[in-house]
Length: 138
Length: 415
Image (cartoon, rainbow over all chains, first blue to last red; front, side, top):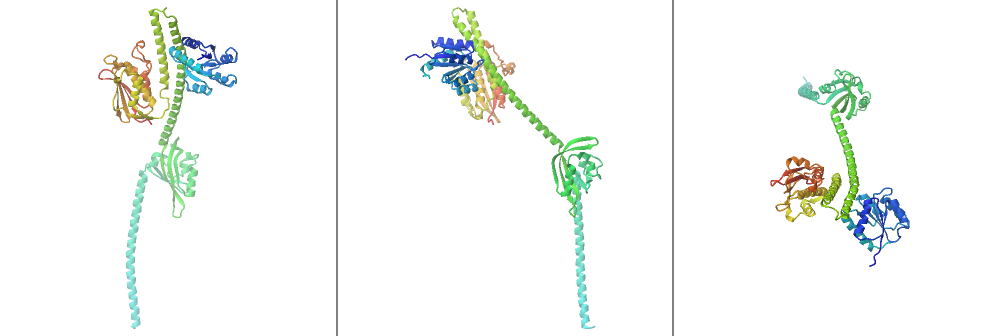
């Protein structure tokens, strides 16, 4: 089976949470290219730019962020004809019913609560990686 | 004398006799009639006396207003006692009650006299000057009953009135108070919602830096593996212990503020099943650790609330139960007390000394050093809050063998 690289954009404002993802990738030997954006505005800029390859893009999205939060980011993403099909997985600490409903209204591919311990976060990232390597993308 | 004359005489005699007989009958009848009349008169007198007695003793105010001027011709003792106004007999109604001028009562009385229709007033509010210079707001239930004379004209108006000032005032007060209570309840519900919201947001925002600390400490430890000595190793352990405790406190705040706010419907809950299921979730060491008496009832109640109560009590019993001598043992019993069920959860731990029992129900209080014992001091306060919200009570006792018994009552049927 041919390994297919997924280009991952992490939209996350918390530096420790960014390190968390990086470290979890490292632990799992996930070598996918990982881009980082500090909030929704930056995330959209990067998706619209040429830095990230156009094919096999996946966004890991935090919800609580300054300037443009995750839901606002999703709303703008789905309104942009070029970016609308981009798969997005929400990675958040918010188990607020409203956030969950709003996110799914905006067609997220998944909604994951950040596990409390690093160990379970590593495990979650490993599963996510295995899953997305199987998935056909637009 | 001629035969014809004789006949005439006989005939006259016969007529006289007949007349005499008629007269006698008439006399007898007249006497009887007079006697009957007298009897009727005596009956009427007795009736009048009874009526007067009734009027005199009536707790209701009664009076008669006579003629087109509505002159007060008679009042009963209740009038004197309740309405006051000494010396009004002989005065027209309007003169006796100048304070009624604005109340519309004069016009109403006039209408009764004009139409001959009685007027029935309920809780009519009028200003009344019982004594000179003191006008009070009063309330009355009363009837103005027109009394017609032989020719059909309204001559007198009979008044029958009961003062209800106190009753109306008391009712108004109760209404005002219950309105105030409803307002307070609404405002309380609102501030509870706000508090819940605040606790939710605060808990979330407190937790993210905490997770950062937990992660960073773990990474530092990982990256420094080999360079750490036993002291720094222990310090790292303590650090993460504190983080874990903080997390428990935050979760506790959230659970505590949320408790009871879920508006579920009542359903049939088999408490034996519920306790059994929780025993499995709590991973009790073995089957024999949890002893459930056979009489645990099925209640009609809010499952999630009762589940939370049993969860924390069983979890407490598990944590405090003695691991020595055959391990943790928990007993759950129930007995009916009127419309309530009393549940008793007994452990084989060291028990809680009486002087600490009040403290055990207070949020964030623990009775053991925290670094040596898991527990945020949330379980029992949460249990109490939920139980009390459902109209029950809680208590702590010492078991004959020395362990702790926590008991609580719960309604057999929640409406």
